[in-house]
Amino acid sequence: MSFDSFGEFLAMGGHGFYVWWSYLLTVAVVGFVLIWPLWRRRRFLAEQRGRLRRADALGQQAEVESNAPEA
Image 1 (spheres, rainbow, N blue to C red):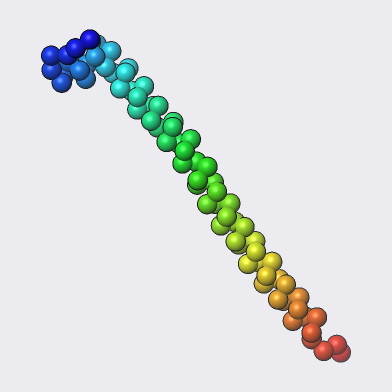
Image 2: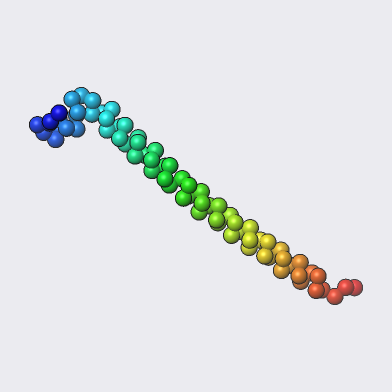
């Protein structure tokens, strides 16, 4: 099927609205599927860094308490 103008190409014989929305929806879903795991990984790593910092701080606090002179 050939089109005589760009407007006819966009209209796609009256089906353009559905064709272009389906392309847009496909690109949005594929983008979401690609970006979501990256975002979750980044968030997971940030949470783990926070847990390690808290564990390290608690470990240092426990060392200080264990080295304190007993009364």
